[in-house]
Length: 282
Ligand code: PAF
Image (cartoon, rainbow, N blue to C red; front, side):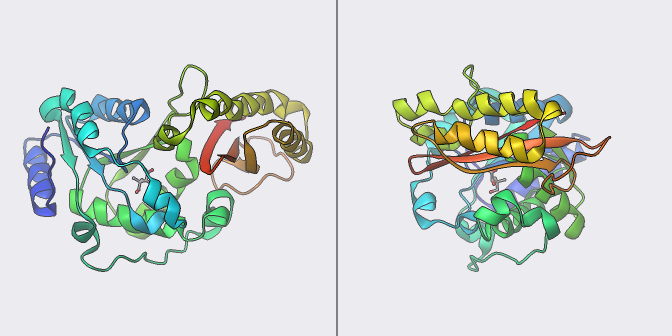
């Protein structure tokens, strides 16, 4: 499959598709594509005749230089994987220059309380980088709808806010987390896990499921302590945070309220590889 590398060419292709009354979907990725990405593309194809998949490892969203350097880059294999979709899927692989035009910096957004917790707290500047690259990509691609996995649930909320702030006319849709049969959430970072780490990592989802079972009968604080204790006695995984948050504004739960929906979130390290996952609690 041939990748489109210029912003003029991708916009031309999108505008031609729209002229034929096609709905254009967009699945932005950083490559190292896996079944989770393919499930996003399949969701997009259910309501869009044409889907643009971008592959771009965005330097401004990495707050850790080693993480950026080691991020898997597998463009040839990615293109091969996408070739089965034929002309319904357009692949956009811009260079850093095409996206940033020589100015590789993040815009400073104020995403309010959404960026003060969890990923925002532990990865300073990360969401400004995500917002900046998506603002560029949305303007270059001009899709009708864009699809994001709920594995990065906080990112999904940030993108909704970004669209509001930048007054973009794209509809944002969240798609369920795609898991391996053992429960591990699919992630490009999984490619860096050793066999031993791959065997241990499903513990994260196991604990999230148990937390969901305990949620109705336990206070948020007791549940936090219980999760911390489970990780403390589990070799090979180090808990960075466990949080329970309201699904709308992601504010951490202190006292449960009726008619509110909550999700539990985990970030943990397997060696130097950082994994995140989350689950709906009620
Ligand atoms: O979720 C990702 O892969 C990235 O954060 C995204 C949305 C492609 C922006 O670089």
